[in-house]
Amino acid sequence: MAALAVRYGAALAALALESGAPEAYRAEAAIILEALKDEDCRKIIEHPKISSQGKREFVDDVFAPHIGADMLGFLYLVIDKNREEFLAEGLQNLIERLDEIAGKIKATAVCARQPNETQLATINKLARDKLGEKVELSIEVDSALIGGFYIQTSSHLFDFTVRKQLAQMKVQLAKGVVG
Image 1: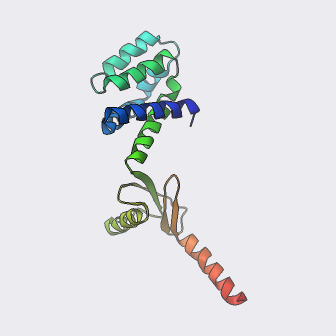
Image 2: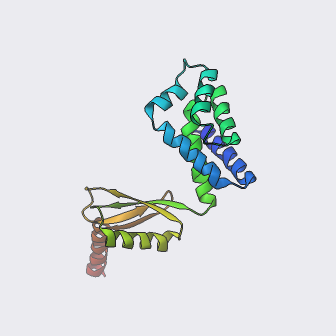
Image 3: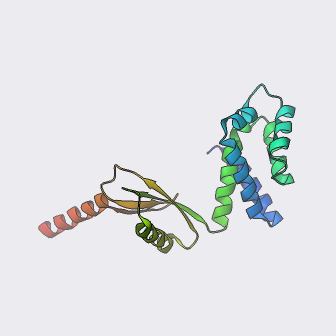
């Protein structure tokens, strides 16, 4: 992540906490990030030949009814400084910081196959047991896995794959034969 995006995220997080409404800032950042997924919206904001005034008018039309003055001011700052390329990263950094402060952890469970409801409940319970109650778990399927699943966060990996279990059995057998 670019250093400037990190600074933007940190500054916005400080504003959010100072205002006493971090969830509102998080929601506003999510609105903008969702809009930036639209290629036309992103092209307008990032286009080098559209004037700052034109971009400000676009932001006013699209975002002003849905976001607060601080977030609108941030968008103006990014536009006026010609730093539009750091906008999405800065907002993503804000969301990550606010989630961390709130004790929320994002985790991904990567499974060999799409889990059924019972398996999904087991994976969710295991994630909460390992990481805490505020886990936001997403599921991905990786057909390259032999079987099982692993849970990954930005700082943890819990491996429950068949490959890992086979490796552990190999080590145990080697110890048994040698020992």
